[in-house]
Length: 94
Image (tube, rainbow, N blue to C red; front, side, top):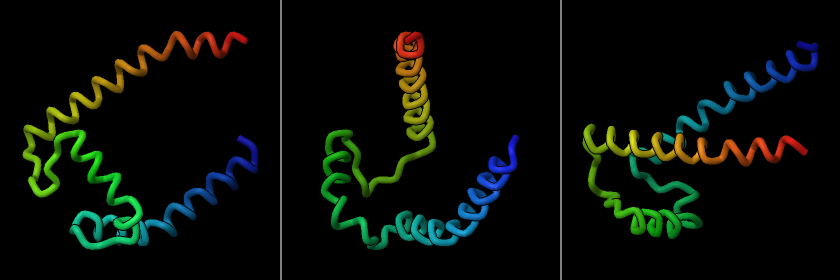
């Protein structure tokens, strides 16, 4: 690695550590259901997404339901990635 790579990595880690308290407070507000500044501009999108997905935002998800959702999400991600591989090969050949 070159010296600029080390500098870039160091700056990345410093920025990440500096932003951690702010993002932590923000995520705590989101998880507690408090009002946040993004609720007004993006709330409509969240409601539409929940409606399309059939999710009730007031109902908590049990561990079995969460495990199934996580499994399905990962399987779909693997399938989509696998189907994309031939196209990546075509793009790199030029």
